[in-house]
Amino acid sequence: MQEIGKTEIWLRKHCPVYNSATKHPFILSIRDGTVESHSFKTWLAQDYLFVREFVPFVASVLIKACKESDVSDDVEVILGGIASLNDELSWFKKEAKKWDIQLSEVVPQKENKDYCRLLGGLMSSDVGYTVALTAFWAIEVVYQESFASCVEEGSKTPVELKETCERWGNEGFGQYCQSLQKMVDRRLLKASDEEVKKAEVVFLSIVEHEVEFWNMSSGN
Ligand SMILES: Cc1ncc(CNC=O)c(N)n1
Image 1 (cartoon, rainbow, N blue to C red):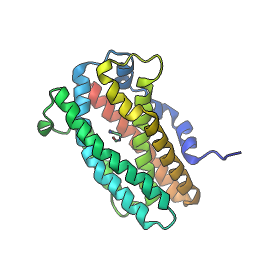
Image 2: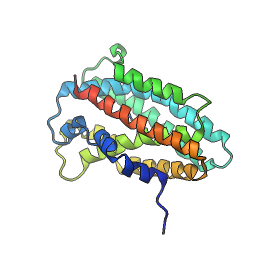
Image 3: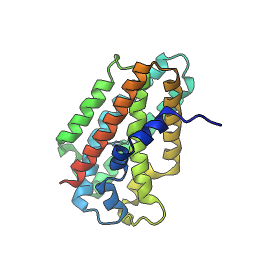
Image 4: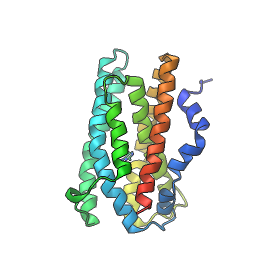
């Protein structure tokens, strides 16, 4: 029988806050087709700025992975993630045009800045690979689970938002998140108690920032 990983234990232990991120009113409003276009546009514009800051963060995780001798496969998964982010930034520009958003004029809101500040801190060389990788996984899995719920059977996502939801809700992205989760669990098995605790704190902090990020989108 396979042992249950630390990440699964955290997901169960912190289920209420995790669910408040993945089943946020903003996501539910996409899923049931009642989302306001200005909310969606706020999210799109702010998320573009976020993803631009996310790229150097993921690059910092890649560098940490490269410096560990036992994680050659991790490097490939992370590099794949960076490659998709290249695509993603082009997609944001295309999507912004469709919604008449001038990306050069978008100003980051407080919640976005706070989140990016957290990412900046995690880029420090004082933060170990295991903790940084945990943050990376948490960031990806919240989007994956949220948007997957908008494309599943029975969802009433408006047709013009389907492509957005598919971007993070598709099966390939789900598999990628599972790979990241396995990588995190493997690292946590060998980590000190102190490191495991740090990783859990960072996991929670990411989830809370994701909730704030959705709040920003639906509250405007
Ligand atoms: C705020 C936030 N969290 C996670 C993601 C998903 N990762 C890359 O796209 C995202 N785009 N934005």
